[in-house]
Length: 232
Length: 232
Image (cartoon, rainbow over all chains, first blue to last red):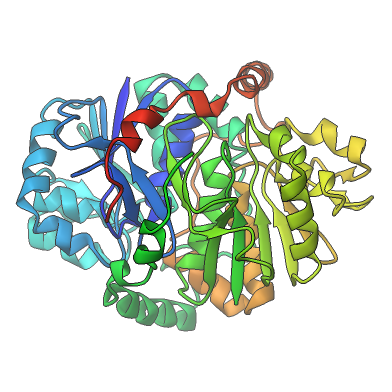
């Protein structure tokens, strides 16, 4: 069973790696990190590099297509016709097409969400209706036919457990949960806009606005990396 | 403020990327992925590549040293004198030295845990006493002076929120929690050995034993990746 994760410059790493680990720890899926070319892709914030392992052309079909979000580069991907065409073509053959965080906007821009209910990161929620989708701000996971959208960043872990239960069975989802010891105990209860204190919410919104204006590709020292040999 | 994440072949990606994202989303830390050489490092399972951005020599001091675990390669790192010496040298100057999952065994092997209480992944828990440390199997985070250990894989997110509250302040930890929308809603309650059904626990143990015997570096098609130019 094959999972394709769209791995574009500026993606939010945990959007992809949270779900990845749930699938990976079972060692039952073929997992492809897909981008225009194979090689290093800089995540948002400019400090982490993930490897794209397959080109878009190499992955024309998969059981699960997963689109992560980005704090600063979602709009670039949404305006990329090559990616939009690829998403539509691959989506036609998936069992599930899923997004984490602002990845829902990318699905929407590709025309895949239509007027379905969907969730996304709170900062991206106001943009969903512009593409016709119906925002569900109080839901962490929204399933609508084969489209499954998740809320921001860390929601991808819950999403992936949900998807393993569908793609394989609930037993293996529970095994994956135990293998990654997902028994969350956040030290604060500040993970949703309706739970956070007013001043925390205000400051988080201000930070998100600043982050969204950075160009993630400018931050890491790419020249330094490219003067060294990448090997394993 | 600088954070160094030991990025060794075969590490469990979410052990590193869960905490990374908590720190990264605040955009207030310098974060280094450190290994013997700069370049691609294959995570366990053999499907994901992370980039090491700094060499061990380049990072001689940091505020937080973070050691992730591995399902199959922990012992290799524990037997690596170069890494053990580096950990001891860097630990001497940290504000906090932390581990996720079986990373606690790596700290133990370097002599950093001593006879302190510590936690780790349930599969690694029986090994902690061999190094003198006191296992705390029911705790998700154990703090002992500047040593902070976390339970398996996903516990790194809770750990990082805890550390942000210490390194910066609780307000920014709450902001980070809201920015990554960490309001966990696992679809099952199977994330700890004392919660999982007996048959799930038995099957998870059997899988973990099988995983621990794989060599993660054999799985990915490295030659394919190396024949392409890594660029951004």
